[in-house]
Length: 172
Image (cartoon, rainbow, N blue to C red; front, side, top):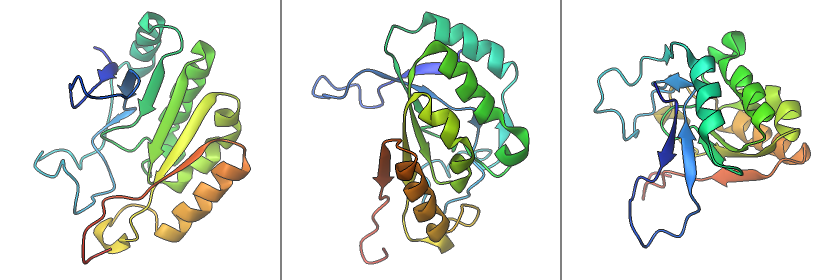
């Protein structure tokens, strides 16, 4: 089973984005955001671990072209609360480091701070989503913790991206 897939949701010849790949260490998402596009999927908010993840990740990495860019994660946060104990994302990053791929971590979690030393040794960037709608994101870390995490990423010398979305007119 493939765990790294080409990521081109628009499939438009007008897209000027460089080719990139998508990787999700977990299936589903634990944040339970009320505005999530995936709320129509009944089991989406039930977080699941992937069987044979590390073996499948290694196999997929061997097949990627040189200088591949992996976006982690496009549909489920790589740092759900269970990551503190399970360290699945951390192990995946360690494997990716061995393959010298470029990684863009996309998260709403301050747990990413735990892995800053590892990320600083990789060709990586970290994007942290902030909406200011804590009540709309019941299981995600509060906005203040995400702002602190974004600062820590920047202070570690890792390219930091603020992803300010969704913007809901009249709400945030």
